[in-house]
Length: 120
Length: 107
Image 1 (cartoon, chains in turn blue, purple):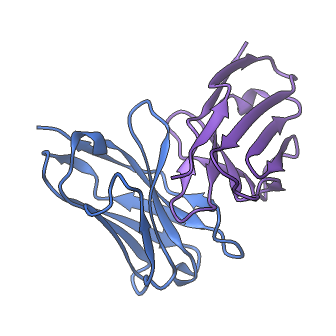
Image 2: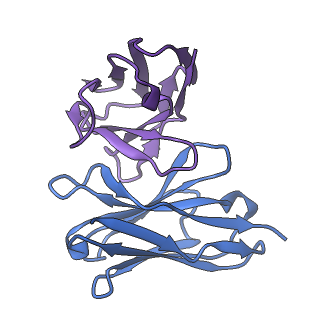
């Protein structure tokens, strides 16, 4: 079964750091681009970041650029999001998602999400 | 960044109704437009990709159309399980963006 499982969320103080993980199974992880998408409480979806299949290319939303770093370990089938200088507005459920295989321009598999709360 | 604007923001409809949701991009995005469905407390689900291609396993009552700046998601006959929030998303630029969502509620 194709599956993505996020972990690493929790409560962190403003200015703090957190690293999210996304464990992939049921597919050849190293062949797919991967993404992080977040959703603040009661709000819509916001695309956060993307990494290509071998980790050589990344993109970030303006709101997180310079503070967040996406990475992957293809040997461990795991995607990461290192989040630094966290702000209250980063509070959200964070989803990892997979791009399609024949087309990388959509997200066809999603995890259930992990919750990040930034508060003092 | 490319801005995506959905209309309406919410709608009330009855089972069996034909429902149409529109999405407009702030610049031309060819057919790099996807539609997702999200139910409360759940992860989004891909419905339509590349503007009009139906994702495997998605019922045929869902369809998408459009190119350039104007796109449409149509549900031909609304079913009880279709009450949810729908999002469009562009993948034309390196920085992807979502619309603000359209909540489909029971009338």
